[in-house]
Length: 167
Length: 121
Image (tube, rainbow over all chains, first blue to last red; front, side, top):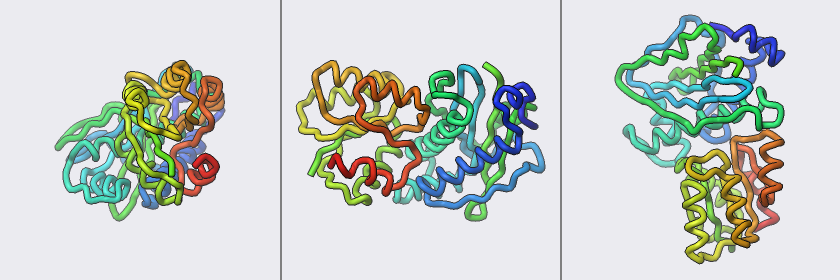
């Protein structure tokens, strides 16, 4: 799993540089909106695309570049994240949980878009999509053009993935 | 004390912004919420007294820029500040030329809200 070579040329970014932007954006979103301080464990040691008792938030890009940025975390961590964001206890999968994880994906999408887009008009962001379940696979994470960053926060792990292609 | 209309499709973000406005010590009274531009226009049409509008850009049904255009087309001059993940200068310029007064990038801190909104409230 690595940055698409065409993307590396057209954006003038290396995989490490792009990973650095994603790490910085993720830590910024978490420190300001979630009140948590995740640490990255880049690079990912083993590919991951299969999730159990987890939740995934995704935002798509379209335009000069197309792709998906996604955040994947265990439901237990998502409950902690949502509780911290809202300042109230969130104990089960509900609309608040889905909305919170979708909004984190949305903010990550905005940050990555700022790196990719010159003025903001050449790349469009989708509305966030959220899925959760006992057992599911996210195919885009096993894509050879996906950059995946593992993070750990409060002794739990989560992933942020970015799949990019020229539009 | 000002009444605020908060337009954002994320209920989480509406709660965070509401909390942050109060944490920042801004003079806020009522906060009315809307999930997209269409709902925002409905709140304005209801005749509520609103002194400041805060709006996301990337929303379903009616996005923030269309919302700003519609508000101004109705002759409403209430200040509108965009609070958005969209930081691109062209998008912000389009929002401003459509009638927005200022913009705040998500994620933000209460201090950044105070800095951008303090003079308006």
